[in-house]
Image (cartoon, rainbow, N blue to C red; front, side):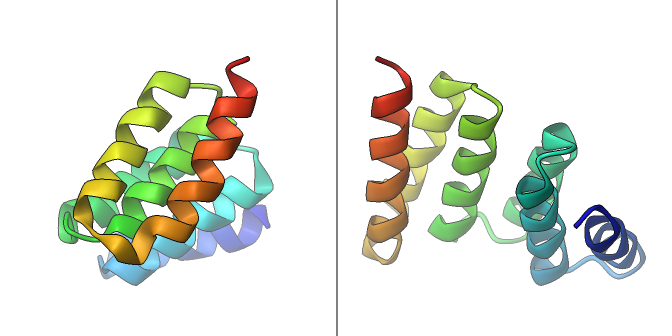
Length: 102
């Protein structure tokens, strides 16, 4: 998965797009090897599409994996505010966040 992350990150740097930044972030998250880079890639995707709740949920998931619960909760709130299309991801991540903070 690390090579996929590198490939998507390289492609996104050469030709920035929401999809490439998102794919790079998801690959880094799945590999759990470089969560800082995963967060940076998700933020770059959000810079291009701040109204996409799924990207806020992705960033929340990265923060949750990095045990940055306050940041994860803030991103989940942003995802919730964006709209109902993110409510499934919101519910799953909220349960993980609640479970992890006890």
